[in-house]
Structures are given as C-alpha cells and as structure tokens.
Amino acid sequence: MGRVLKPGGRLVTLPIHPNFDPDPEYYAPYGFAMTQTPAHVDGTSVNLDLFYSDFRATVTAWYWNFASLDAALKAADFNSVAHINPMPSKYRTAAYPDLLRRYLERPHAVILEAYR
Image (cartoon, rainbow, N blue to C red; front, side, top):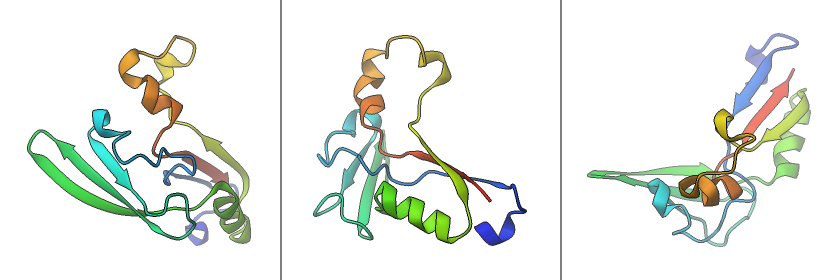
C-alpha cells in the first residue's frame, strides 16, 4: 500500500481491533459474530460470521496486535500512526445510546491512519 502513496500520502485502513471481545456472541446484537481460537494471537485468522435477516456470509480477517501493526507500518516507511476507535460524530460528547454502548466500548475494528 505504501508504494502507491506519494510522500505525505495518507493510509486509512480498518483492521480487526486488537482488543476485540473474544466472546463469539458479544457482537450478535450488531449482526455478526467473531471467532478466533485461541483469541488475540498474532497472524491467525478471525472469522466474522455476518447475519442480518435472511443474509448470511463469512469473512475471514487476520489478527495483529497494535505493536505488530505499528512495526509493519514503520517498516514500510509510514509514520504518525494513529489508532482511532470508531465513534459516530454525534455521540462524541453525548452519552452512548444503550444500543451502541457495548459496541463502542469494545469495537470489532479500529481505524488505523498513517502517513508516508
């Protein structure tokens, strides 16, 4: 990804959150389940089972902790790496709505931003 960016270019990606909740049912109210056995092991797969109404799908992602993500970006000449938890802008200062509270406390993904 770094090779296609000009100097000063920005990378934004959405990896699995290194602190995701390992209980497969934690995210069920949001239409998906996550499974990784054992949980929080670098370089291993995480299954995201998506379900909404009649829709079903499975996506395989890969888990990396913050140190590994940062090291890979620095090795590719990225700097100013930031980890940003997803947060709807209208809730930044207001109390979380009950429906989103648990998700926002332990999101399944993190926004990763880095500059070249």
